[in-house]
Length: 235
Image 1: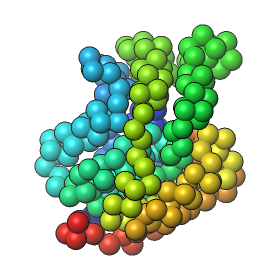
Image 2: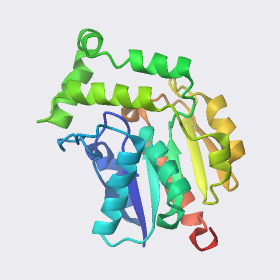
Image 3: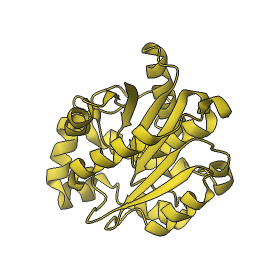
């Protein structure tokens, strides 16, 4: 069976994939990991970065002696997967992303960083704060939020359209039609730059992973990963 690695988003953890992992396990060997500093793992001195999380993936593949793998990445996890597809294509067979943000202009970044204000979060979304506390214990959830905001601010050299044009692997970009964080326009723009890309718009789907129809998502993932051609020998 094919191997699939599921990568969570910012502030997330592998526990969010429990249902999806069960759903896919009949067809694939499913792997999940927590990025550094997430799900109770310690925060490294160097702080969060896409490069650090990509290294987490490579270390996991080396540990499991997996030469190359298919990846599903939600939000930030999708960005990490695409970073790997560009810089380490020999380790990646194909990538399926959901709700991955590509517009990291100064204005867009500032808007996202403002939402990662811990005091505001405690006042406006206390239930979500409670989830973060439990999800990342014993690590202080505030530090994780602050580290994530710093990573976004430091994303001064995001992947460009010319970078995506260099990726020769099968890539499926998906976005929800009700996603308030990631626009269809920015997703389409990157889709058009890909050599071997495809685009999926999920109906009635907002950004939060907890509000995604996981049965529909699992079906789409099965269709994509079962039909993907292995281009790793041609890059």
